[in-house]
Figure (cartoon, rainbow, N blue to C red):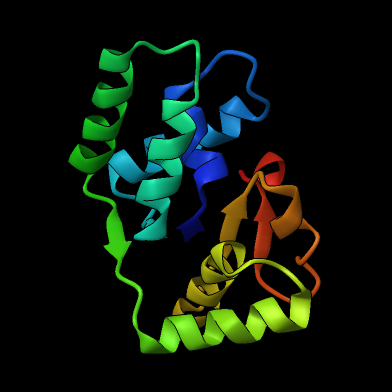
Length: 137
């Protein structure tokens, strides 16, 4: 499966987040080895930025969250020519940003679903393999 930052952020900032049960279930399955997760390298910047602006976490908590993410060993997919070309195509067709399109491109290229809590991605579920986090089981 492909995860976006809207799901992974929930692993580290639990207060007032919707769909925590589903987000935690994904993490539990990954740690148990029953679920495979891929993310684009862009996600590192998105998660770091979201944590940076999270007022409820201390600097040390933010640093620890990023360290814990890397320690999980999730497959981080570097952007390559095929992925970015596909992203541009998707962005053009769907009128979304390249930042959003890269997740859909990875899902398409790996033939895996994108799990998301991002409303922009959820709207595209008719054309792509997109599963809303709330529907994950």
